[in-house]
Length: 503
Image (cartoon, rainbow, N blue to C red; front, side, top):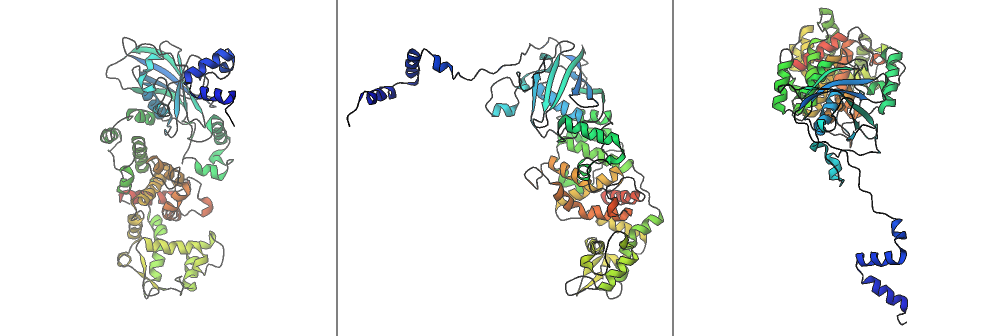
């Protein structure tokens, strides 16, 4: 087939450059068709003024929008802080963990997701064009009383903060970069569903003691001792004072502010080597509370109650040891004796004569082996050299505390130490401490799942410590999430001694 006029035209079109082709189409179509697909519009840029001749102290009120009752802070900030630095200040002021993306939007109107915004480094890496927040000073966008700046954190929960300039004053050259002078209520819990989720949690807290109207799974997810009505300005001030400090400078600041200096448990060493500054601050505060806030003096009766199950196991193994079945379980007569003498039938069902079906007995046997009191030898459980040296209740308690946090894996040991620390700081052992352990380890960069340390994995790491402390306090399994129970001081004393080698 010979080339027709259409084929000849295709050849000529193929030889045209893009510019020539556009010119031909414009002549033919008058530009109408091309106007139907305009080029992407140039993004709107925020207005940025020149910095003032003199840096001043800016007093701002920062509100977390749509929280009920309102959550806010009053801050005095150096006007020459960059917006990137203001981001760190807001994070510290409300106790955010900086898990998520953020964005600043200029005022005066509130145009979240519709108006111009300042770019983060992430935006720049994604190919966006605009003005970087690290290149803009706070006093370039907040200039007169009443000026507003908006800050959104976590693009899923959408925590938008309104930053309003209340006054501008002369700056003392020695003044810190940021100071919190007032505020109301604790910052919202991370990842709780934005303002609506926060407000529901607050309503549940205010409606009844102990969050009794809330689902158990949600209660376990909340931080121990969570109280949305409280605001610790000293803690906020400490977080603000440590923004951007090196590890050495941070430890110096904490050593100067904590009474008696810093005394981190050695079992946390592996975690402290990874911990960012905000986690170091949190751990320092927990250590202070763990050592000072909850009375933990043990009476002779307390020591007797704590040592009783371990004494019984060692006594049963005194002569020829506790005989084991072919499957490696203790013989039924021994299991039933332990079950009855320790009153374990109050927290378990069944005859209590088979170790594989009587979890409290199996757990006690495993703990005695873990603590180095018993060992397997020729189808029997026999006393270890350590067990042969123990005579008094005080010696048994000291042996339990000294070995409770031992583990070959330094990160598992850190998890166990965290649980003990949270127990001593909060006043009792609770299963929901495992969620805090998971969060803190995640903040240190550790992972057991794609999103960090999973709470279930953390619970497995700390299970032996949790159950040992729970048993020491005399709690039943049904009481595991209650606070302030009689006997909890025993668990606090053991936890404290395991962390700092003292009873």
